[in-house]
Length: 246
Image (cartoon, rainbow, N blue to C red; front, top):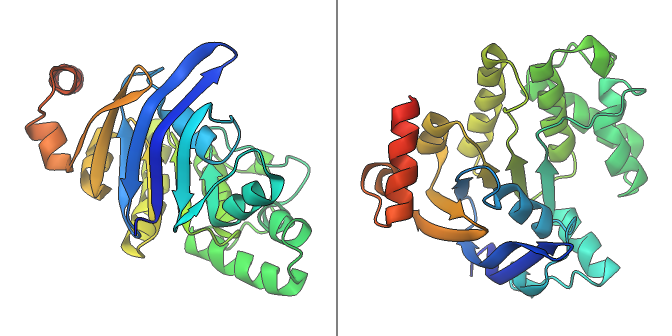
């Protein structure tokens, strides 16, 4: 049984269609990367999955359980198991790093504060910020803030991590430190859906790569297939443009 099964998903902003018939199956421990031009629906798909934009039709099934996006209990159960990290770090500016990471497990999941803090300290050490527990976001670089955002998502103990262009707001020299953390999670077998324009990284870490265009998945395959031997004209065109850009 797939960890996550998406079937014929449609979504729209107001009356503007943004996803059209998206189907995707993700196995446990897989890293599936979504690539494609701006406006192709990659980030929208992640937003729909966590219920930030309701789907118009289609189904999402998590470990055999269908998600009912109109039901708050079903949505809460989904968000217990999926966490998203955005391009903009969205940290609470008035809270130190430790509080940023612990607030959701304590307030929303009602977990014991001391247990959560111990776990958060271990997570922050893991992402290389064990010495920044009492620092505020304004005292951190962009790369450090994004690593806090990843630790905050991991503190929710998700089964599936959704990463939405997590390096695109960073200065080039800070990108590598965030990618190193993602590599670490890949090595630990975390199931991930990754939206990224870092094509070398996508090629390295992905189990499979899905190319999106105009709100639909036009081709999906192994990194070698998508980058070296794309089958569709749309994929051939996109890959040729990437190669020219590099």
